[in-house]
Image (cartoon, rainbow, N blue to C red; front, side, top):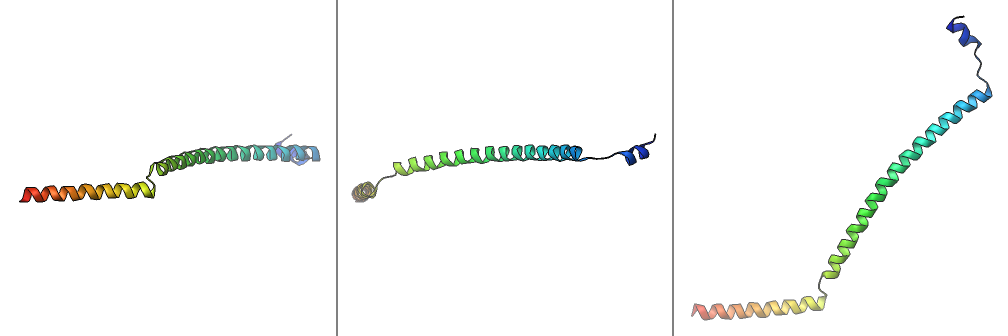
Length: 93
């Protein structure tokens, strides 16, 4: 019996077709779940990094002076600047 005769007599029935399609579907769904899993891991890691960055920014913002504190610091700086100008004027005389 040659290969052509074997292929001509081969019949593909419904149970075999069901097994073929279910195997292909199972393989496709497994690959899809693996891809989704990898994508989820990447997105989740990126999300954690972004949350950590946001926390760092919030801490930096909390460390910034309030407008009142900033105004007081500016006034002190002006006073120090005025004193330096007076000291320089004394040395210039």
